[in-house]
Amino acid sequence: MKSIPAFLEPEANPDARTLRTVNLHGPAGRLEALLNEGAADSPCAALVCHPHPKGGGTMHNKVVYHAMKVLNEPEWGFRLPVMRFNFRGTGLSEGTHDGLAEAADVTAALDWLHANYGVPVILAGFSFGASMAVRACCGIDPNAITQADVRALAALGLPTQGFGQRFRYEYLADCRVPKLFLSGDGDSFAPADQLQAVVNTAAEPRKLIIIADSDHFFSERLDAMQQVLAGWLKEQLQ
Image 1 (cartoon, rainbow, N blue to C red):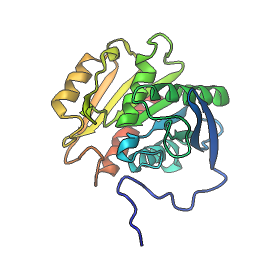
Image 2: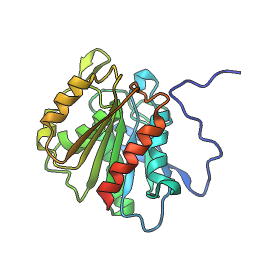
Image 3: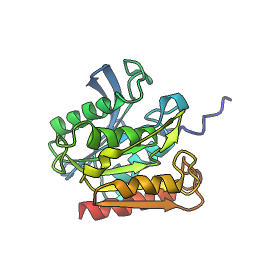
């Protein structure tokens, strides 16, 4: 039997009443997406963005899946509708991988959630997905996104280096959306000193949490990642 790659998490017995396929209209064409329905009276919707396609990243990534569970499943207490989608050129999504233009894919997903739910969005991303989420929320047009649009921004494993480049986030200095930076102390894509330097440049409110004994993928520490994310979300939604 062929083994399942470590970066994937199988979705056992998805409930057809709560999980549905969505076709987003992105700037490079159709974007493949899944929506986990939430409670009818949800105060927010949520969007979770996946890691780098060149590293095997898709919307079925294990970290993305576990973050979705925090936002959506009843036992965590939020029960938000949560969208995941494949960036351009990934899975069934049309277009070609660019490396920066994917921030516009995030914007397309945010627009869909706003149009269909009319509530603020909790925006989260892992690794490359965190970088694109930050760019969409804070970098494309710093005056376009407000807390009325994005209630809070969670950057999981935000990279400062990798795939032959350095990631820079100067635009965080003007981004006043509440922000969580959550990484492992052994994250090779975001050494703690580099990530701390990025966070130091970000406007308040901001919070940096480093999980001990954890790598970039929160291997064996996904439960800790979920607990931190849930605790921070409670602060934002109270």
